[in-house]
Amino acid sequence: MMNISIIGAGYVGLITGIGFAKLNNRVSIIDLNTSLIEKLKNFELPFYEPDLQKYINDKLVIENINYCSEYESGIDKDTELVFVCVQTPTNLDSGKTDTKFIKSVLEKLKELEKYNFNICIKSTVKSQLVEEICNKIDIDFSKIVFNPEFLREGSALDDFFNPDRVVVGGQDNDVIQKCLNLYKDFDCELISTDPISSQMIKYLSNTYLAMRLSFVNETYRLVKDNGGNPLEVLNAIGKDIRIGNNYFRPSPGWGGSCFPKDVKEVENSYNGQNKLPLISKIIESNELQMDWFSENLFNIANQQDIDSIVLIGAAFKENTDDLRESPTLKIYDRLQNKGLNIVIFDKNIDLNSDYSFIAKLDDLKANCLYVEMFPDVSDERKILISKIRSLNNTFMLKMWE
Image (cartoon, rainbow, N blue to C red; front, side):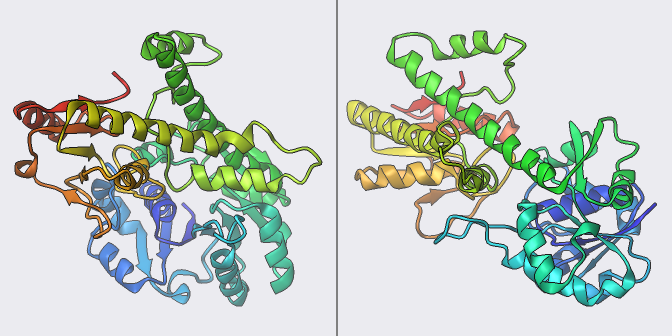
C-alpha cells in the first residue's frame, strides 16, 4: 500500500486515482473545481466511461479514496507520491503546449515540499518544459519522474489494469523505483528511462497511431477510386503480422483530446534543418479525409434528392461523450457551409445551439441520409437502426462494412 495524491480530477486523474484505490492504495484526488469534487463525493460522474460508475461505487475504492478541493486536504506528511494529471492544451496562437496549469500545480507543490513527497508527471508535456518551470521556482527537477498514460477513451479502466507497458522516466533511480513499485504486480513490461525519452514514447506512440489511421483512410480513398474493394484490401494487408489489423479501420476522420494535440507538438518540437515530411502531413491528411467524406455526403444528398443528412454519434469515437476535435462536428460544419440541412443524432450528449440536434427516436424522419460516424454494437444502436429501416426512402452509410 502507498499513500498517493492525484492533482486533477479530469479523465486521466480520475481513472488513475480510482485504479490505484482499487489496488488498495490510499488515494486523495485534488481538484480546485469544487462543484466537480462535490459530484464525485456524491458518486456522480463528470464524464461517461464504461464501467466507471461501477468502480466509483466499489467498496474498496470508497474506503481508500478521498476527494478534496484543497491541496492541504489531500497532501500531508504521509504522502509519498503526487501525480500531476492536469491538462496541457495547445496554445492557439503559438501552436505549442500551454504549460500554465502545470506551472500552477508545481508552484503550489513547492509550498508544500516540507512533506517530502516525490512528484510524478502524468500530464503529456515535454520534460524540458517541466525542467524550465522547476528551475524558475526552485524545485529539484532530478527528483521528478514522468509516468505517461496510455488510456484509451472507451476502454480506459481496462487499459489501466491491463496495460501493454508501463513507462517511468527520471534521473533518480530511487524515485523511479518508488513509482514502478505501484505497478509491480501488473502483467506487463516495466520500462525505466530518462525524462525526455519517457515523454517522447507517449508523443510518438500517439503520432504513429494517428499516422496509421490516416494511412487507412487514404488507402480507402485510393482503392475505392480505382474500383476495388477497400475493406477486402485493408483486411488482407492487416493479415501481415508486421502490420496487423488493430487500429486499421476506415473512418470519416480521427479526433479526440490527444492525437491532434500530440501530433502538432511533435511537429513543432523538431528544430533540425530539414522538416519531418511524414509527420508534418498527418493532420493535413486527416483534414483531407473529412473534406472527401463531406463531399461524398453532399453528392449522395443531391443524387437522391433527400431532405436531410443525419450524422449518428456526436463524440469523436464510440463509448465516450468527448466532443474534442470530433470529426462529426467538423463534417457538420462543412456540410452546413454547403447549404445542406444537416442534423446530429445522439441520445447521450447535449450539444449547444450551434448545432441542429435530435435525441429522440420519434424525431427521426423519412427521406434522409443516415450516416453512422463510428461503429456501435450496443442494444441502443440496434434499436436505432431498426427504427431507421422502418422509415420510407432512407439511405444509410458506414465505412467499415
